[in-house]
Structures are given as C-alpha cells and as structure tokens.
Length: 524
Image (cartoon, rainbow, N blue to C red; front, top):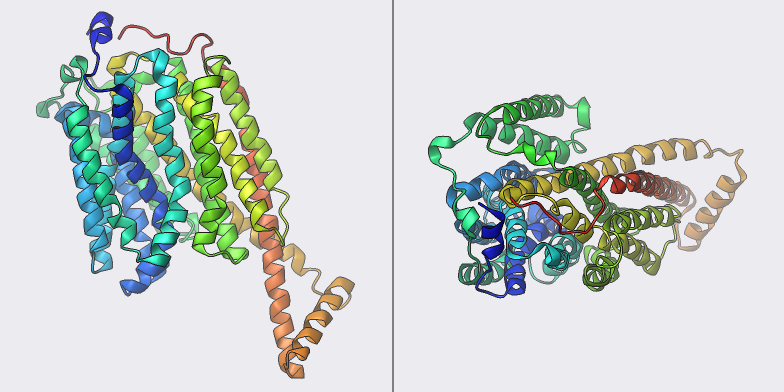
C-alpha cells in the first residue's frame, strides 16, 4: 500500500470521538488489573476460600492477558481489526458479568482467565486504531486520550475498588464493567472503520504459525505465573517457580529464534529494526516499572504498616490522579510542539527520580498529606513520559507494521510492570528482615533507649489497669510491633531509593531516539 493511499484515508467519524470510544474498553481492562486487589479478602470470605487461593483470580487473568497481548496483532489480521476489537469488547463485558455472579472460586478463576484472554486484545488494537486515525502531527494530542486509559486507570483502581467493596459488594468490582462495555461496543460499531491497508493485510487460517503461537503462549504464560506467584512461594526456593522460570526462558529464546527465521511469523520482530521503536520499547519498560511498582508499594505501606483502610489508601492517590488529568493534555498541547521530545522524556524520568528521593525520607509518623504528595510527585513525572514516548516510538514506523508494533509495545509495558511489582515487593520483604535483624541487636538491657521505651510502655499499660506480669508481656508486644514498623519504614525507604537510582539511570537512553520533528515518517 503506497504512502498516497495511506494519506487518502480519512475516517467518516470525528477522529477525537473515535479516540474517546476506543479508549473506554481498554480503560476497563487496565482498571481490572488493580481494582480487584483490594477486594481479595472479601472475595475469599464470600466464596469460602483462603486468601492465597483467592489470588488465583489475579494470576489467571495476568497469565491469559500476558499470552494474548503479543499476538493480538495477528488476531487482528486474521479476523479483521474492527471485528476482533468488537469481539474483545463483547466477551470482556460478558466475562465481567460472569465474574460478578460467580458462586465459587473455581468459577471466578475460569471467568477471570477468559476475561484476561479477551482483554489482552484491547490495548494494542486501541493504539493501532489511534495511529491509523490521526495524522502524525496530531498523534501527540491523540495519545493524551490513550494515556487516560493506560495511566489514570491503575491509579483510580484501588480507590474505586475500595469504595465499591466497602459500600456495596466485591461483585460490583466486575459488574461495573457491564454498562461501560455495552456503551463501548455500540459506539465502536458505529464509529470505527478499518482503513484500506488493514483490510488488505488479512491473515489466512492456512498461514497460522503454530510453532510461534505455542512458544509465545508457553513462554509468557510461565513468565507471568512466575512473576505473580514468586513472592508467595519464596521465589526460586520453590520447585514450581524454578520450573516456570526454565520453561519461560527456554520458550522465549526459542520463540525469538523461530520468529526471526520463519517466513510468516505470528509476530514480526523486525519492527525492532526501527531505531525509534526499539528505544521506545525500552523506555516504556521503564515507564511500566515506575507506574506499577509505585502503584503497589504505597498501598502496601499504607495498609500494612500505617493502618489505612483500602478506601483511605486510594484517596491518597486522588491528588496525583487529578494532576495527571490536567498535565497530560497540557504536555501534549503545549510542551511537545515546542520542546524536543527527547528532552521531555529525559525530564520525566528526572522527575520520577527526584520523587523517589523525596519518598525515601519516610518516617513512622508520616501523615496522610505527605503520603498523598509522594504519590502526586510520582504522577507528575509520568505525565511527561507516556505521551512523548508513545509519539516518538511510532514516529518513523511504517503503517503496515502498526499492528505488530502496538502489540509488542503493550507487551513490554505490561511485562515490565509485572516485573516492577515483583521486584519491589520482594525487595521490601527482604530489606524488612535485614533491618529488623539489625534493629533487634539494640534490644538489650544495656541499651538505654530500649530500657526507656520499655518502661514507658509498661507504666502506660499499668495505668490502663494491666497487672504486673500482663503489663510486662503487653509492653514487649508493643515494643516488637514498633520494631517491625520501623524496620518496614526503612525497607520501603530503600525501595524508593532504588527506584530513584533506576529512573536516573534510564535518562541517558532518551537521547538514543533519532532527533528531529516528531511525526516525520516513511511511507509504508
């Protein structure tokens, strides 16, 4: 398809309306990756299951989603992009309804598996539709609409999930998707159309790359299983996690070799020959790590050690969410046209780094306002990253590669996000034990601060009516609780410091992008 034919395509509907309606469904899908977390204890209790068993409702979704995302471009070519997108919206909505009425954990896990399978096709196809709907000069502003679903949704998830669960029921965490999904399906059916070059790039059933499909499914399924269950199973001390890691590495190495050698691969890895896309994929991995790890670490700190409820924890993220809503369009409209995009991306990671340094100065008596500001500072940096990086990544890529590129781009972001969550939680647990062991060396009658605090607790408890021996035991319990909290605060400070160093280390990579006007592209 020539560049002239590409330029001649103009959708009948308003492009901004198209961008808005195709963002509705991915917004639901991304929201579902975080909204369920706060509801797990309620799900476990309602379905007579243990909390550990209930986490399979998360694992099943992530495994299915991780398998489908990298091959969603191929599904779009096989079924047609618009029909496949509509199928994903319809089935994701139906599966959300089934999750909401599930009567057992087994049912919920199966429906979540299906939900993740169809949800995996939403993000890549959304971005592919936006790329083909807008001219290169408008993509920066268009991606600000996409960013609303990708970045704002995981921030909103814990707040909305906490409110729905506390006010109504955990079932509404899923049922809330149903009306949104129905509206999205009708709107997409009416407004979205496949351009000529997409219609002409249909795959055939006889061209199915069974080996590539199998290796990708096995590799990413095992990888997501390892990342999601590793912390609970003590990582590589568990035979199951070791097997999952070996299967993942062997399958993914085999997949890369096969996809580069076969004539009709299920995913075209040659998109990485485009320098801007290759660098953008690395950078979006850094964005995914920053977004998802910070999104999990702060709730863990607030709920686990500061005594916050799920709703109050979510509210601490609200100022950051409000800032993103304001900043993302401003960056797309005012900053990108006037500042070289490489510098904008570097500045975003610089802000992420400084927010990590600020967050690393935690204290046990941190208040709600300070915690909200920590989250807000992190989101300010993200507002300078997603839209510029997406715009730059696709700026020189031929249109015929959009389907594979968007699938791989979403894959890098999601896998990096899962890795960020796993590494951050593992590091927090490990550093907590290290700091606790160090602080415990001061629990000695020869240590004056220890004696003073123990005596203070003892006298306070006696004043409350505790007898001598009971007061002593209770005082030791309070002292141990204080020790654990201080060790946890130090551990989370370490995690934030490492995140800051990581963000600073990514900054030089921004200058690997080809300089020039964003949106200039080859005919494809």
